[in-house]
Image (cartoon, rainbow over all chains, first blue to last red; front, top):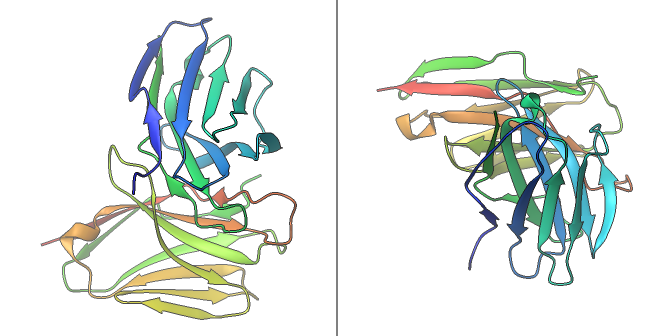
Length: 112
Length: 114
């Protein structure tokens, strides 16, 4: 069974640009979560999507947004990139009623 | 406001000895706790969990202890192996909340020396 897949693996952008990160959940999982892991910090919750709807969001500015498609894959968009947005972005998926989330390998975003 | 805290950024133990990783939380609504392990360049992987109705859960070499009155949980690894060297994240959630979001600690880098 394929796990959670994320693309791209690495992404380099300049300040002010937009970044789009993609995530494919485990087959059958309807919930997708996005987390940010900045250097020296723990995993910070960004967004939770379930059945195509945004269910919850963490303490991040509105320029962090996303969506979930009918096939349950998800996109995270970061607009007006700032240097401090450089981080590892992790996507996780789970069955809607379970809390054991399975994580992808992450996308390393570097803003220069 | 850091609701889940892992106060030790790193821990070093000898192979064969016990590793104890600690985690404190402040939100009394949390009723489900998980530990994840993360190797470099990989996503976190689920290790073990415990619900607030228990005070101990064991899975092979891994045991999680929960002290609700102290709002403290710990992960014990016995015996520790060099392959256990990784970053360990404690996470908490509230099953009764409207969001199935996990709140993570900062992580503890465990190094097991041969």
